[in-house]
Image 1 (cartoon, rainbow, N blue to C red):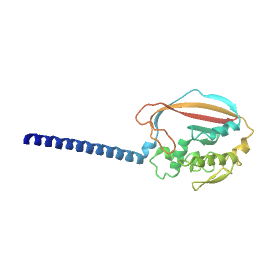
Image 2 (image 1 turned 180 degrees about the vertical axis):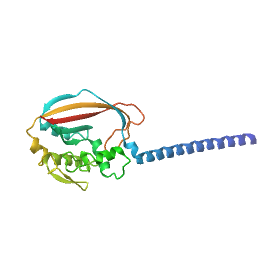
Image 3 (image 1 turned 30 degrees about the horizontal axis):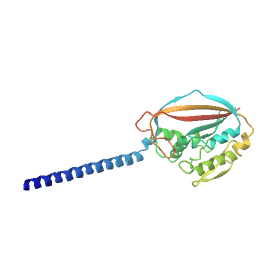
Image 4 (image 1 turned 90 degrees about the horizontal axis):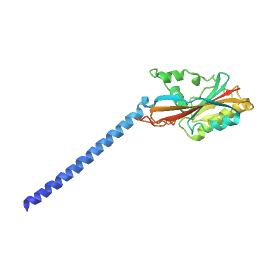
Length: 227
């Protein structure tokens, strides 16, 4: 009887040990996962796209300014990139991915990141250029801030977004606003959809996470050129 009791105690002790050991391994794995996630979030290289891109055939049509206005108010929600040209001059670009990079480039002080350095020296960061993005203070903020930027561009007005002045009253297309200057013009709309796949990490600019697989996604590029 005494041997049976000891056997039961030993079996129970072994069961407790297995449970405790299993739980300890679970905690270690959880901590490792959390640590890797935190380290990944502070590694700026994870915010770059590592993707393959292929484009479908471009389709075109003639549209008025109402179509452009409707598109602008949807671009940040539907992953559109919108570019507006007058002849060969880029008037303005609306692209949440580019705007996010411009915002980081404007605050970048080193020279080892070729992409950010290139953007910092580009037309998007020149206050005298029509396509200047004003350091994109609306990036990663509320929808209201993004809509305010669109309103400023369309109406040729200015205001502060996240304590940064966004001024389209003088730096917009010839000043006075897009509607005032182009409201009666016809535009050639070019529409192309790019398929992309690879590894990306989601950012506040809305890049979709595709980590570790080859799931195909798409990005729409819409170009408006004054006729």
